[in-house]
Length: 336
Image (cartoon, rainbow, N blue to C red):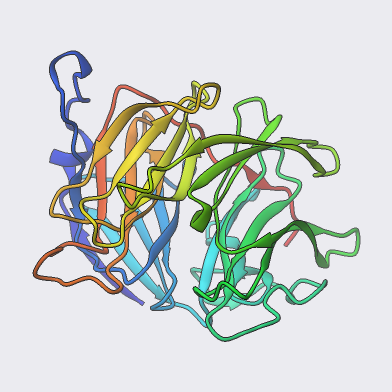
């Protein structure tokens, strides 16, 4: 575990962007952490910290925003690749999380660096092993289950699934498949009323919605919401939903030009606002809203496969304060 202190007040307490007098909006580099594959970023409103994973390097990052003049950045070593994770409904002073490891789900205390129980029970979530693993995931708003789906490691012959992880009456974690025949799961997030689940299978360049039954987790009525431009080499990565119900989607461009975050109207599928990336950073991976007023958009990126001379801050954490507000993350009602 390593820590460093940073003064980020000029970024985190800046004046929100004035949309009426600004035609081009760009994020700013907050932390040059050089993640190989920064992903899964969420904001813990109770501990006032931003959390994300560097999947390839098996690292977990925490940025404590309690004092913006002395922000503490802590990096934890992980026993496995961590695709995504979720907060728990707990008063623990430590940092217990539900972790979607490369091959299972498990309750794990990040501060104490130890498992809090056995790995989940169910079918093999990563039967092919190799480069495949669990990827994007999120806690549903009601806190009854965690959804996470697979990434096939770039092998189009391998098909993965999205799983739902719940806790049984005996305290054991159990998981079951929810969506099948997936290449790379991304953009798992819910509409403001929880009636819709948004989801992307990234290689298809499309974001879909499902009708979501919050009682049993069942999905139905798959509907196309948005398609990325193949001419711009744009691929949908991680997403979140703001307080007005719009989807904020990180756009991965793999060296084809600077990436961006799109604000998408889920009714029309149209892009209504764009946050551009500076420094040529092309691989934008995920985003979340956070900060004391929930109006700072935090954005992760990836350095894997990129030339540091062309993309000097790829893998960094970016942010921008906007005249929009996000929503707090769901918390699992699991017992520890």
